[in-house]
Image 1: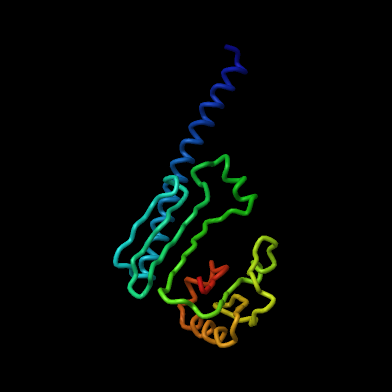
Image 2 (image 1 turned 90 degrees about the horizontal axis):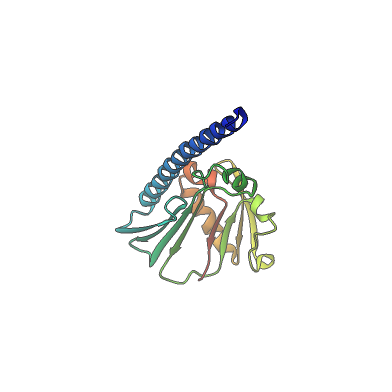
Length: 184
């Protein structure tokens, strides 16, 4: 073997070792984040029973919660691919981020439709609310951030604003992008 070939082999071995270390570090970080998200959800919902299903083992989880007063509660947490160091920059360039979607089914039909939306999301070409042009709109400040309230009935705007004012905004507001109340 020539010196150039030896350097190439050493470089490949060191690169593979680095990828292995980054894989295990990313896996540990995603598991820590998933655990923290599940603890926060359980703290907020106080379920009697919870069922978790891992998505790919490292990407996140689906959760089902049995909560008193709700027909059902579901959550999906999807995480960045921190365990894939070569794909991580691509995911960031594509605009991916850690996300948590929570769906609560009230057990009775919600009258009308109401949304709390971050203004930046409203400007997004991929985000759409059906029938938005017919909805009442109000801008509010919540935890120092501006949001737009949309609703099919004016009285729902008042109720939504009161609900948001009663919530501990320090934890909710920094990551809130869209909160929807729909009849279905």
